[in-house]
Length: 195
Image 1 (cartoon, helix red, strand yellow):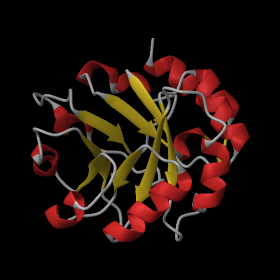
Image 2 (spheres, one colour):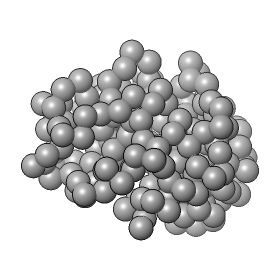
Image 3 (tube, one colour):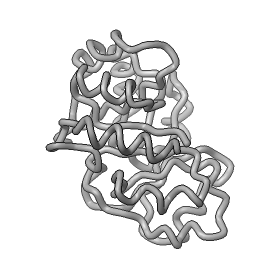
Image 4 (cartoon, helix red, strand yellow):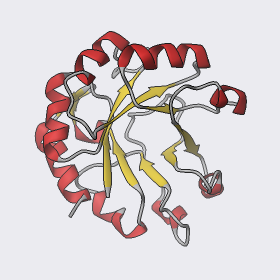
């Protein structure tokens, strides 16, 4: 099971995540988020990371030019589109990307089944609020291309493992406070996901 620790805002948190065995780190380029990071600050962290760690930039309601500019300045390697992006916008992106499905119902998770996608619980704000999806929605669904997010913690991760998700994405569930990771929670989360 692959793990992404999202909402990284410091070198210490990045180091903790990597030493714990995380496969990817997420950087939030949405200025209304308490986990927002500037491209320059993200670059200062990303430039210290070892190889083979995916560096994911999260974007909300941004145009392709803005996304490409921030991607270059920060050094991310993958774009996460946390909004309904048009095909035209996606084709203009200069890095690989994944789309986010903000699921309101079981029907939503059956969209884009041919692509890897991140599925999160719908909420008015964007990400990191700890709202969980109903796992029963995934019964009988091929989850091998789904990255599950939303309300995950070290305490509830075992419930997710039988579904065979491609990866798990956690942010608030491993924090001491908004934007500050708790090393023990990070370590416990990754250990449970990879057991």
